[in-house]
Length: 181
Image 1 (tube, rainbow, N blue to C red):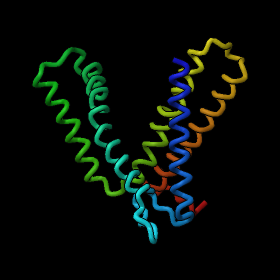
Image 2 (cartoon, helix red, strand yellow):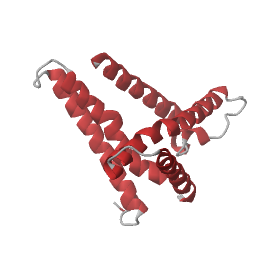
Image 3 (cartoon, rainbow, N blue to C red):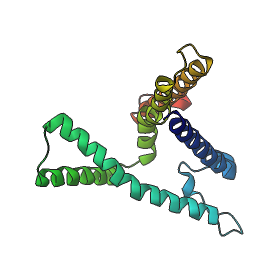
């Protein structure tokens, strides 16, 4: 399990860092909020961006079915506290898909939502919890330097995510602007 967690977190870190650096290096200060929306490079067919866009489409197509099942399961366990009949199962699934579609089409600025949700939810799920699982499953004592280093790094990354999400939320609500600081 330790190998799986270490490899999963390492690969995620490598992939996200590579995408972020490549996206920023393409246009520096003119980088778009969503990197795959950048304009086509001059004199190029931009095959790598096409591959990236196709990968994002594949990710979104597979993400929805994989996310619906655990979400529905938690709703069933916490609200209904029993197994659902087939028609109830279908209704809950359809409501989740419908709600996702309505929120996705009705929300005017998805970048703000991603920033807020990503900072508060994705950072702990992607960084902090796998780090804690690794620390817990490791047979080394809590005072081992590797464990202490991992806890410190994951905590710092979470705090950065929480800070960015709080600034995005306050800015979105019009309470505070980074430019006014």
